[in-house]
Image 1 (spheres, rainbow, N blue to C red):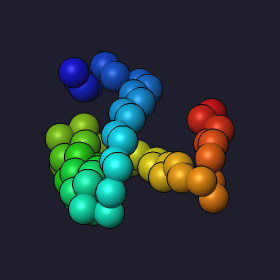
Image 2 (image 1 turned 30 degrees about the vertical axis):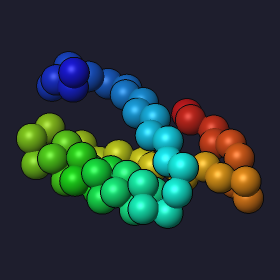
Image 3 (image 1 turned 90 degrees about the horizontal axis):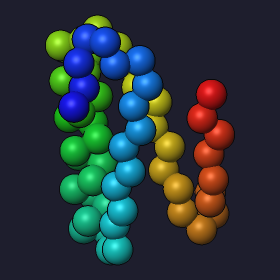
Length: 58
């Protein structure tokens, strides 16, 4: 659960097909909007796939 005291959060969503990926993207955008609205924070997203298999989180 995210609260005002949360400093770092990681969420992993997996999708098998394009439809699932599209729904996941919609959910990510909605979550980013809600985090900004309620907690005044911006998030960073990384989409991993075969062409972009890793991300560095700092």
